[in-house]
Image (cartoon, rainbow over all chains, first blue to last red; front, side):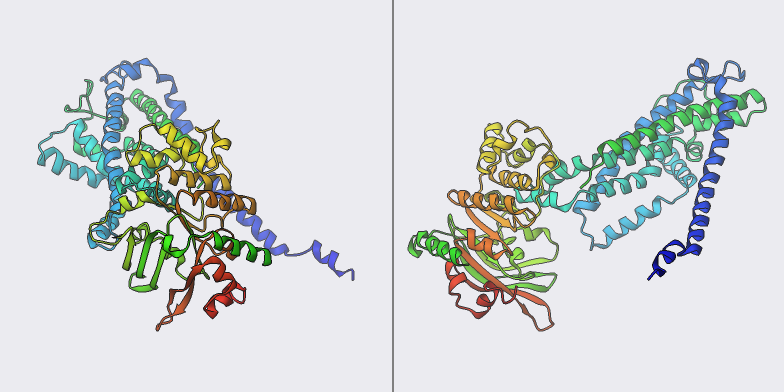
Length: 291
Length: 278
């Protein structure tokens, strides 16, 4: 009769300890990631924060580190970003709409398309650089210009945008489409007026995340001709550099001051990327739909 | 069941006799299969104007499949094949030249789970008229539809509010208003109240009584008492087993509701309506 209270106190001791060890392991994993990242960030900030000033933003680079700035690089990164959005969003969303709403899954070419999009997302970025050099710079005769850089970055992140857009479109419940069809809407009207508006938050989030990845890429830009010393502001059909490339160039210089400059430029680049990512997260939280 | 019987008898007397009934749909030998597997076979019946016609039967008997034939919604399911004929005012709905969009303008549908669009109440009701090019005097159309769906008084001050902020019963009435805004002739309702509480259900049923003055209504329901309450004609479906054991729906009996519930001709109907199975 009194056996039960005693049992309630001492049950399953071993699994409690196992639980604690597991939790400890999780905390350790978290710590390794955060501490490493934190250490890197702190080091970069400590080194570079003093030189994040007007000179960095508004002066062209120079062999004298005291007057060198990253204005061409910053401008080029911004231009690349805008061109990237202009190219990837229509292409990516269009492909996603085709695959989700119009394609007949049974057909072999559609299946081939689907498999290849997943594959493309895994291709190393330098391969895209070689591709860009062969087809855009030389093949199409564009030359080593900003536009070629934007196009190659588009190809790099397009699979990501397509996948994100497809997820967003798929998340729209079928009941919405059925309701719209039942009212006499054509397929195009259903897609344009119901499915797309409802998937804009997901598409926007995916696009911004893809953009922030592209802006940090160096290898493809180098191959497509981003010069490492550019003293003039970029134009779309002109030669260019970009922030990651500029950082790379400065780090390679012998003088210590250039290392410090590189750290400042890293801070700027990180600032741009973190702002973009924060904006994407805010967008997602604000417009997240609970179906 | 007795006072329902009295009401049924009264209602049967109020129905116009056969000669005065106008046929809206004449279904002849309709069958539906999904990717080769037969789901419904050999259904023939007539649906009359300004009647509420109910399809009842156990689950899997093909009633939803059948009602979706009337507005070409089965076209949206890949692999769905419809055989047979449905004559809509004498014209074959499944003729080769028929445009599903034109069909759906005239034959609207309300679904089991309310599915308002993630837009404002106004934009929900206005969606149909806008896509069909009926966007003159949109405000009046929206108001008229919401009045007919008995929802106007509850939402007239907040037409710009999101449709998803409404309760379940209100959302379903919004879906009905959405259908009515395009001025259809027929309303198809696939278990419109099964996701709602009893009070909301009663309001939908009262709405059906009012709407049948201007529209022809076909309703699928698994709730027999509901069919007894609202329907003028009732069709009872059941499931047969095919040779390979697949479930095929078929029509057993179709008659005035009072007859189905009080003096059914087929034993299967009798078993179902008296609750011996179901």
